[in-house]
Image (cartoon, rainbow, N blue to C red; front, side, top):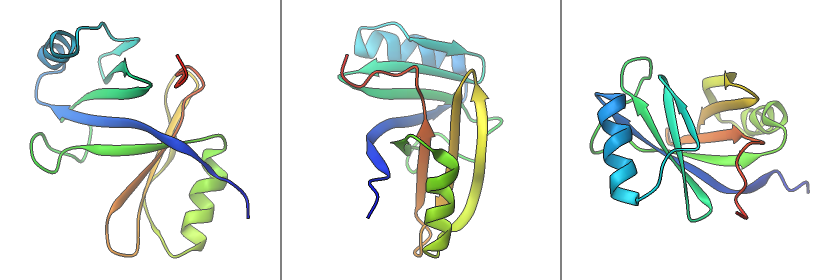
Length: 126
């Protein structure tokens, strides 16, 4: 059986103001973002990524239930199709989100969101 998943990579927190969210999380975690765009800000925290994303442009919401977890993969299209073959339903097909980064989300058999990310810029061993 192929080993598709490389480990947990990203938790995304949705905010109503991306600039204020970036500033708050930078102060809260004592670090500056390694990826900073109007649509997404990424921080490396202990080998994982904390993402801050504005509510507009996403289907999420801030607060309880607003966190999205992404699992690191090498071939996002292959893993996305593998999960669909197991009965998952599409939620967000693989798409580029800036530079070489790609994300996708499926719903498992119970409606849980299972996120995938291909991010060659992020080094979990750093």
